[in-house]
Length: 226
Length: 328
Image (cartoon, rainbow over all chains, first blue to last red; front, side, top):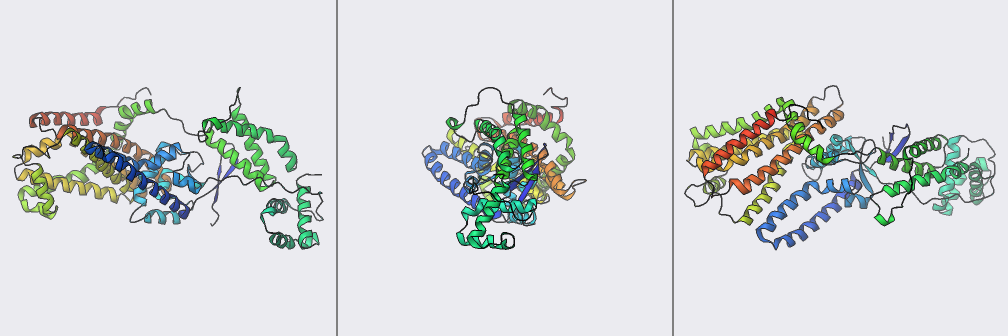
């Protein structure tokens, strides 16, 4: 199973799609968080060093909290994402797509210490590679997944052209592909859009730019522009 | 209905819902959240949206529209089905009912964790009374002499002479060190229980070796009066942390009628409650150890009496508290 899109069914009976984040992007997010924590330790250490032993004690409590609860605090109050995860555009949610709670966030982060073994998330990586949802052990136990926080692509309106009926009846799936093609045509180079349009030469009986135009006209017709 | 007229017809509804979601979104800065006046029938709007999403999916509308509806529905789903909790009554209920009843319910695991900890502890402690050299097979000699000087009754102060801000430093250290040990003892359970077993036995062995040695050389009063107080909370907490880890390991080894991951999820929820209790107990223990046990000005007799009371309290708590369900 190479597809990383998972669908969850809501109680209303619709299927929602989520895109899972894999080990690499999660690794980057972890490294960013590591750097942030490191910088904070240096800053806090310098600051609390001024206050002698009292400051030292405070610093140890602070380090303890950061080591174990840094991800928990952010996952709870920053919409499921530590700063590192946010910058990589990923977040933690429950298996059913709802936001993480204190319990699940704590569990997955306490068990992080086992996933980290023997070095640099060795066990976590093995677990992620064997699990179809890229879960490390903490995720399995807490019932969480890490998903992309998809931003909706720019609304790509289909260029308005005189609508034209396709010369042959098309199945819904074929119609969908043509509409998707029309939506994305602005993102392609002219060569690529011609190349793709030429595949349907048998339908359009045209080549290159003319074929592109025809497909866009069909798309306009399918969208109901009459 | 084709896509354009579908969009035209319902766009206003979707935008109204999106606007409402934005008004509730804690992620947006306050001034960016739109104000929604009057009452809004959110569940109805959400169900409509779900309906539109499945229509769009089944009618093969464009990927962009489906994705837009998908994300909007997802946000609504996350908002409507988010977990709500009441922390204060939850906390009281936890301390006075849930935690002690849970330990009683899982008494077999509790017993097992106690055996894994106390058998090595007393075993080594007694073995050292018979054969004093045995301590060196467990601890390095430097560490032994370090402990010896810390609890020397002829020294002016037990432990090290400390100012009050040193006490706070030690408090910080105990929080950092002991709770981390507790967490690791718990998390080690994910290795089929082996990590938890290791930490329980290992801690039992080293505490037994230190204690056995100090008693054998005649430092028992300084040592025991120091550890008896906070030991009640600390040792019991570490045992419960191991017990929580064993719970996870048990789910991996013997998932019963569930799949392994399902069994882990169920065990995870239970064991996390034990960990909550462990955190609480270790914070209390750190406080006692830093501000009570180390006070040289308090006589050993007082420390013993308080220690017995604390052990009595812990036993009473786990035996009797929360036997009757509280009105939550």
